Picture 1 (cartoon, rainbow, N blue to C red):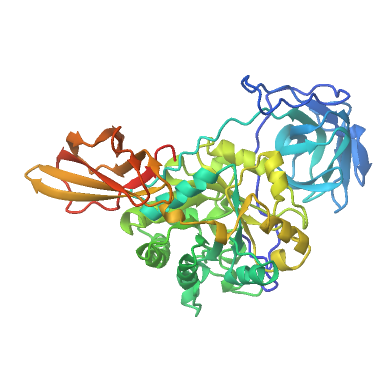
Picture 2 (picture 1 turned 45 degrees about the vertical axis):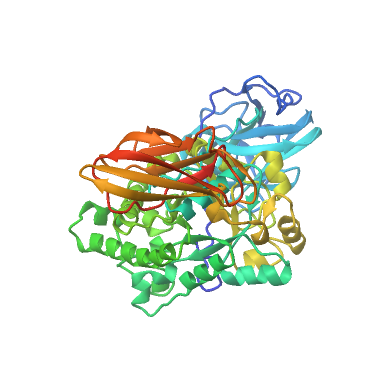
Length: 596
C-alpha cells in the first residue's frame, strides 16, 4: 500500500487495471440486453455480442460531446472530465435483470487514468483506462442489473479521458475453479501446504476476514466484538536503510503471538530503498520506499551484479530473510507479499517498468527459497497487468489492492476477473488491501470469489465513512466471512499428516518407510501423500501404496485395504529405492485426504 497516514500521506489511488480488448464490434442499442444464461444450464458457456450504449446519448454533467478524434462509434464521444463531479450517465431501459459484463469504450491520450463507476446512483468501484491515442475498450467488471430501467454513470475520478460508449453482455456461467492447492515450492513446509490447502478448499464458498496492524485488530475486537482471521503485518522497519537510522520493529514478535492465537499471518514489505535516499522536506528518508524519495535505480543495479547497488539489494533481502527465518523455525507459514503495487510506479521497485520488477521478484524468490531455505512462504503477487507477471513457477497466489471511493462496498469484480485470467484460474485470488470492505452479499451475487481481504489501518477502519459501524457488523457477522474463532487448525488441513523415515541404506540402495496418520476428527476414506524426489532417486519396489511420479514429485495413494483411517489412526507404506539419498529428507511429505 501507499502509506496513507497523516504524517506520510500519499493519496494516489492504488493501481488495479489491465487492458483487455473485446472481440465483438459495437452494435446498435436495443431496448435492453438479453437475459443472462441461467447458472445451472448444462450447455457450455456461449458469450453473446454486447449491446452498446452511446455516451453522447446519455445525461451529461460538466462534460460535452465532441467528434474531432477519429474512430468513435455513434455520432460522437464525451470529453471534458476535469472536475470532481463531471460525469456521463447512460440508461439501460427495460432490462430483464441479472449479471452482465461491463466494458468501457474510451480514448486515453493523457496517460493511464482511473474513472469512478456508479450503478443506479450507488458506487461500484473504479475502472482503469490504460493510455491509448485511439479509441479502445477496457473491461470494467460485472454489474448486477435490476429488472426494469437501470443507470450506469462514469464519474471523473482521475479525469482527462474521453468516453465513447458503454457495452453490456450477459455473463455466462463460471466454470469450476482449477486451483489445485499445490505450492510452487516443491519443498514447502507441511504448515505452508496445509494453509494453501485450507484456502483452496474454501475458495468460492467463503472469504477470510483480515486487518492490517495489531492496533486495528484490537479496535475490531473492542468495537465490533469479532477478531479477523488474517493479520496484516509489515517488514518495513527491518529495512537496513531504516535500521541504520534508528528504527526497530516488533512485527515478528506480533506474528509469533498471532500464530499462538491460531491466526493466519500475511506480511508486506514497504522496502526502504537500499541507497540514494533524498531526505529533504517532503521526501524524507522514512518515505524511502516511494519513487520520489530516492535516486536508487533498480534497472542499473540489476544490470551489474558486481556493483555496490546489487550487493545492497542482496543485503536487504538477506536481512528480511533473517526475520522470516524466525517464523520458519517456529512453524509459522507466511502469506508473503513483497514488491506490492509494482505496476503503479509509485514505489521504487516499479519505477523502471515491468522487466526490472520481475527480475527482482525472481531474484528474491531464488535467494529466499534456495539460499535461506524459507520453505514456509506462500508467494503472493500483487499487480494485475500481465506485462508485470513474473511467472507461474514463482507465484502461489495473485492479488490486488483496492481503494474505491469511501463507502463504496462493491465487489471489485472487474479486478477479480482480470486476476482469474492472469493466473488462468489455477491460482487463488486475494484482495490484499482494501479501503472500503466489499459487501459479502455482492461478492456472492457477482461471483467475485476473493480468498481473503485485509482492510488497511487507521481511518479506513475507524472513521465511520470508509466502513460505517453497521457495515462492519454486517461483514464480521456474515455467514460467508470467516473470523479467527472459525478458522480451525489450518496448518494440518487436509485430514492427515505423513512422516518419511529412511530405515536403512546400502551402497546405492535404500529402504524408506512412510507413516500416514489421521489428524482430524472424522474418519478418512482415502489419502494421498506427495514429496519432492531427490535427484537421481529411482523406486524399485513399493508395498501398501500405489506410487506414481510426475516431474520431480512422487505421489502415493492408498490401497483398497488401508485407505480407511479412524480419527487418530494410522498406516504405513514403504518402498525400496536406488540412487543417492541424503541422510534426512526435509521437509516432511505433504498429506491430504483423498479428494481434499
